Every structure is written in structure tokens, then in C-alpha cells.
Image 1 (cartoon, rainbow, N blue to C red):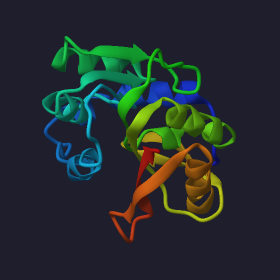
Image 2 (tube, rainbow, N blue to C red):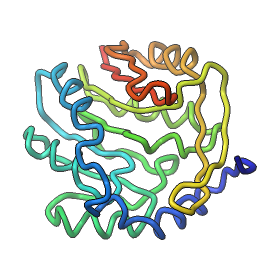
Image 3 (tube, rainbow, N blue to C red):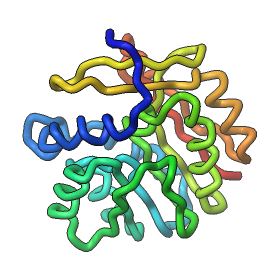
Length: 204
């Protein structure tokens, strides 16, 4: 374990150096798809959708397009965005830090799969409130977080790069969800004993 760092610029640079991993055959392109299909069942309408931290694989973007959404992607890594655009040239991509980005409209579906846990711990609640507020009526958000009870952050190596991750803790995560006018539709430790938690929320 390395000392935690909250430098999002460093996170972007790290992902720039390893962006090709998610676009290659080494990566499991079915990762998260089953969970997304389940979350999509809660919807009755198809409007805008966005993949936050879309990465370079294009798998979630492709799924949302298949389901008829007007789809966008967002990522802090310029290399991730460049590879994503090659795969889906007609999709709107935002090269931005989610903490600084402001949505131009509301979304029927928001995916934040294995991405927003890179947001600095002291900015996570504001970021989550932003995502909940960006949901259209009855809109659904699927996100992943660390399956911990108390808030915490850490920096660990991945593919040779030091990557910072943080989580506000499951109790606070669910409390914030309800405070933001949403209901929890699903919570799952989907990779137990790894502390990887999937949460599906829906605006009431």
C-alpha cells in the first residue's frame, strides 16, 4: 500500500499510460454488463444516457446505444477518450474531471462503473449529489464503490501505475442517496470476498 494522494491530474496521467489495456482482448469486455442489464430494467423511458469514466473499452457505451439511448461518455484521461472516439465516432465525449464538469441536461441513465472512486474523498459527496441531481424523473444511476463502513482512501498499484481510490462508506453512501431524492433499488457485493459493491439508485 502506498500513501494516498488526491491529485486527479496524476490519475489522468496514469490512465493515459495504460489506456490501451481496456481496449485490448486482455480485458474482459463482459465486465459489468450483467449488472447494467439488470439496472436498465427499472426504466420505462429512454432519453439521454452517460457513461462516467467511460474508459476505452466502449462496452457500456455500446450497451446504451443498443438500448436506444442518446449516449454520451466522460473521462478524465485524454488517451481513454481518444480510443473511445475511434470505437464510437458518432457519440459525444467529454474530456473532463467529473468534479468540474456540469451536465447540460438530465439523464435517464447514468453509469459510473469503477470510475468515481478515483474522486478525492473530500469531494465525493458533492460529486455524488451532482450525479443524483442530473437524473431525470425515474432516472437510474448505477455505480460502484468500495465496500467499507467508514470513509477511507488509499493509493495502490495497478498495471504498474499508482492509482488513488476513495469511498465514503456504505452507510453514508445510502444515506446520501435518500437525501438526494432517490431510492436504492439494489446493493450487491458482486465480487466477494473483494470489497467491490454495486449500487443502483433511482430518482423518485
